[in-house]
Image (cartoon, rainbow, N blue to C red; front, side, top):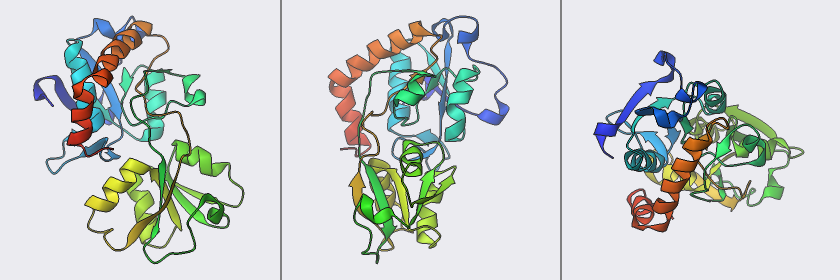
Length: 252
């Protein structure tokens, strides 16, 4: 990631809006990119408190190819689409699934990644090994995600919603939820890298809650930005850069 085109700002101090309210964001020098930084390895804060990850590298490459700089706006996941709709950001890069419901409100790029979801339980649990076993159980999810929508439609499942994926895992660790449902790649990374979970949590099973895949989101009012981003993204997906990013962040 090249720091010359990459800056992090807080949503609470962002006092200016995205360009598409008056035209295309392509008219701007700096693209405002919204994310939620507890979705490792796609976006997370490192030891220096910098937001890094697969999505952050990818949006940096896209911006560079477009001749733009990037400012990343860190906010709650469920605030991302409202912020895009009100012009506070230009692009969402947050491992967001391109669902038909969301596509009614935002314009999605090409899908760049697909993964099933991981269902995490305490290491000594043997009674949960499939979707059918969730009836009568308490499930922890990140608010506003596809996992939230999927489990909320299931009969007999009590859903607890949190702003961060970290909180969903911790609720299971503390015994306040039976299972955490989080993106599978994020689940594998967290359980492998967080020493607090070693020997205490395990993945009970994987199951897709959606087959839509992850995409970048932009305003429906800015077709030019979508066209330009999609063109660059297609180049990345077809070339060596995409595999290099996957290798760097240990993504299957």
